[in-house]
Structure formats: C-alpha cells, structure tokens
Amino acid sequence: MQRRQFVKGSLAGLPTLFLATSLVAGACKKNNNVDPNSKTVVIVGGGVSGLSAAKKLKEKGLTVIVLEAQDKVGGRLRTNRSLSVAFDEGASWIHGINGNPMATLAQQAGMDTFYTDDNSRKSYDIGGVLRSSIAYDDAEEELYAILETLMKSGNASQSFETVFTNLYPAKANDRLWKFLLSTYITFDTGDLNQLSSLLYNEGEEFSGVEKIATNGYDTIANYLAKDLTVQLNQRVTKIDYSDTKIAVTHNGTTTVADYVIVTVPLGVLKANSIEFVPALPAVKQTAVQKVGMNCVNKFLLTWNTAFWDNVQYLSYTPEVRDKFNYFVNVKKFHPDVNALMTFAYADYGRQTETMSDAQVTADIMGHLRDMYGTSIPDPTTMLRTKWQSNENSVGAYSYTAVGTAMHHFDDLAEEVNDRLFFAGEHTHIDYFSTAHGAYLSGIREADKIIALL
Image 1: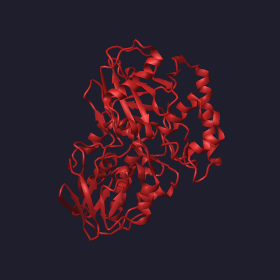
Image 2: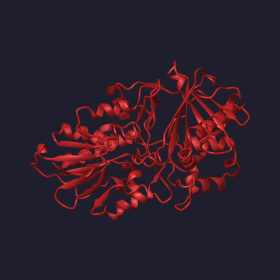
Image 3: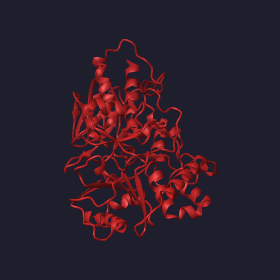
Image 4: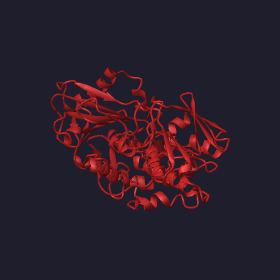
C-alpha cells in the first residue's frame, strides 16, 4: 500500500532544485568577499540530511567536519546485513519516484530497487478467513473519502482517534477498519490518540510508483559520505554558540567552527541530549515540544521454506490495533530468500522493546498460524529494531500531533544568529517524516550558509 497515498500535494513532482532553494531565498544576509576556504562547518549527525549538507558545502570549498554518534553513517538509513538479505531497519521505500531526489540518488549510488505492487495483496481475518477483495477495496476507498473531510469535524484540542470514533463508532471497533487505521494512518503519521484531527493529512508527496531498496538503503548514505571528513562514535553533548566561534563538545573534546548544522532526530532534541549555550530560542523549544515523534519497529523473519501466499502484501486483522498486522513478502524481490517483514506501531511498537525475542516471535507466529494453520514451522532467524529506546533517534519520525501547528516545522528549521542551523526530516514542512525530506533539508541549510559567503 502506498505510503501517504491519501495526500495529494500541489508541489508533487516539482524539480528538486526549486524545492531546495525557494525556501532559503532571503533567509540569510550575505557577507561579501568571504573566502569559503577560510570557513569551517561542523555538522552534528551523519544521517542523510547531514551528509547532503556536508557534500554540498565541501563542493563549495568550505572545511566540513561531520560528527556522528554511531559507528557508521546513515542515521535512520541503517541496513542490517547479518543475514543473506539486506534488512533496512529504517527507511525502506522511495515514496513516489517522479521528481524524488532519492530516486536520482539511488541510481547514482548503485542502490537496487524493486517496484512493490500495492494491488498484489491478500487479507485474512481472525480464524484464517480470507477476506473478499471487494470488501477490502470498498473499505479502502471509503477510508480515503473520510480522510478528505474528517478535518472539518476536528479541532485543535482533539485527536484523530477521538473525532473518528465519535463520527464512526462502528468502524472504530471493526477489525478491518482497525487494520486500515493502523497501517494507512498510524504507520505514516503517529499515535492516533495523539495525532491532530486537523493536520493528519498535511504534507506533500511525489507522484509515481513506490520502490523498495533491495541491496540496502544505506548505499545512499555511503555514497553521500564518500570523500567527506566524518568522525564516527562522536557523541555531541554541548554546543556553545555564545561567542563569535561555535564550540562543539564531543567525547570530552571541543571542535570550533564558524557554522554548525544540527541534524539529530527530533526525538534526540526532545530528550535534551545536547546542551545549547545559550538556550535555544523559546519559539524553537516550543516547536520541539509540540511536534510529535512516532515509533515504528520492524521485524524480519526467515524460514527454510515459504508457506505463505505468493503476493507482495499480506494483512491480518486482529482485535488489537498496531500489532503485527501487515507483512511484506520479501521473497517477491529476493526469490532465494524465504522471509517476511512485519511491523509494530505507536504504543505497541514501544511495548515490543520491552519484550524478548522469543515473546515477539511467539506473537508474530500466533498471527501467522491463525492465517496458515498450526503446522507452519517457527522461523529460523528474527531481526528487529528498537527505535524508541535507541538514544540516537528516540523514535522513528515526526508527525503532526495535537498541539502541532504547521509553522512549528519552519520554527524547527529556523537558523539562530546566522550561525546555528538545523536540518532533518522534522524541519521540512512539506516532506517531514521522509528520507527525501531529510535530504532536501540538508541541501536547504547548506544553501543558507553559502548565501552568507
């Protein structure tokens, strides 16, 4: 199913150059006759936003140092290759390939992709009952119609869940509708009981088909990082921008820079993991608090032989929402690998981080055995993510929570004193929560610094 499929944005498909540069016009004051080679930029975070900014700034002749807390670049573009298949723990898909900078980068970086057909699917109800495709399609179309109008009944203090349940109480308790709300809304945005009933459909999308990375999304991060100065395992704890030069403290040492771009995830900012001196402006602190941070965890299971249907997507509709209800058939794009990928969202996603591998596997197998019978074997291996408890992310991606205003995304992107800059998916008002939004935000901040020279 296409992520953000219900969002039809007017900017979809516009050239990347326009999207990246139109937002910075007039944002910074130019200082004529400055030699780029004399300026140093420290970028905090080696994810796609930090790397895209670093690459552009280096091409302009600035000295650029990337400080990355983890043992490799990529941030939430993180691929686990411990098995015979590349398991993307974070970003997996290019969402709409027309005009999407990630589609271009994928080609340049040698990232292999596969078109995932949204219509290649089967849906099972409790008891292994195969659901009519007509019933599924009808509910899906009705959901899209509801999403076009539900905000008219919303208000700033009520969540999507509250408004939806008040308007459609029968649907709120229907298993198919629980699944649709979970995988079409919560997956793409955030916790339904915290999601804004006014802003749930904000954000733009690129047109075109969806493609999933098959040899690892981190190929893009590695491509962007080529020839950059990246210091790994460097945890930034303090940024002092009280003087002309900015002092960045990491691992007990200090690096001094003319400009700093902070690209850490919103969850890290919410956790106050970095001390800013002076404290960040109140408007930015408010934005950090008001914008939501979702949790989505992913699970890859392998078997010696495949027992499931030969379709791209399998869904299961249990009573509990957000719990292992959606399976991606990895075998469709890796024919020699017998694997399924499944998900847990929002509070249940967070709950899985307190569960053992055996407990997680048992819950997943409970659903699969209800679909395919009790005789199917246990998996041979299971890989998992724990994004909420990961101190380098503290969640998966941003969303419009109750209390969020769209200007908060711009507030998160606002530079401070033309020296301290901010990038990341949570700073892109049009493409928040996406890898391409992160990439474009890095280009935007690099352009701001270049405009100062």
